[in-house]
Length: 237
Ligand SMILES: Nc1ncnc2c1ncn2[C@@H]1O[C@H](COP(=O)(O)OP(=O)(O)OP(=O)(O)O)[C@@H](O)[C@H]1O
Ligand SMILES: [Mg+2]
Image 1 (cartoon, rainbow, N blue to C red):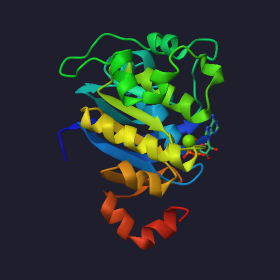
Image 2: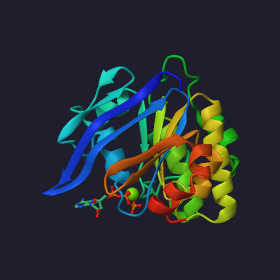
Image 3: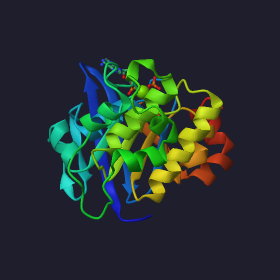
Image 4: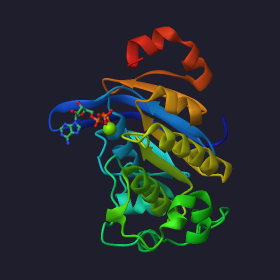
């Protein structure tokens, strides 16, 4: 694995008195695509919210880009270069595609070529063709791409994508997978939360399987694909 960029160790999280995450540990290397895969309610989104500072872990450590971040606010973690695309798409429906991108613009980051609308339109040709269209008049898949593009305008070194394939038509899922592979090629590390093993197989280098708030398995994507027992026990396949 490349040098670890994002590291979580021994994470515990609660909602009220419900113990949701128990001893979650994971690592994402620079330029790696890693999937956190598990069924509904397994704790994928909660893990991501801990990593970006939206849920405060009760115990455990998080390191990003060499900084301890488990006590930092979300905006401070984002400024260190961690991008986050939540499950629910959050575009501005009254703003055009181009205006939505401007909302996400942040200073460039050393060592990474800065993202501009023109560069993003090469990665997302559909968005380029509709740059003047209000966000509210786009399909779900287009909105999902726009959310990712807007996050990239912040020049993240690593991006958390919470179920990017959810609700997308099969052909759009293939486009999303190609986009994630392009991000990796541009040096952006990706942590993906997914239930869809097929989609994860198209993009991920490594996988962590989460169930009932705990990591049950970790290995390469190829090892997971070959491990029928793990898939039967923890995934809906
Ligand atoms: N705000 C909340 N308050 C209380 N319980 C919550 C809250 N959000 C999630 N939970 C519970 O925490 C557990 C983990 O939820 P989480 O959203 O992290 O799962 P997930 O793996 O992302 O699931 P999904 O695939 O449905 O998105 C579930 O049992 C869920 O019901
Ligand atoms: Mg979720």
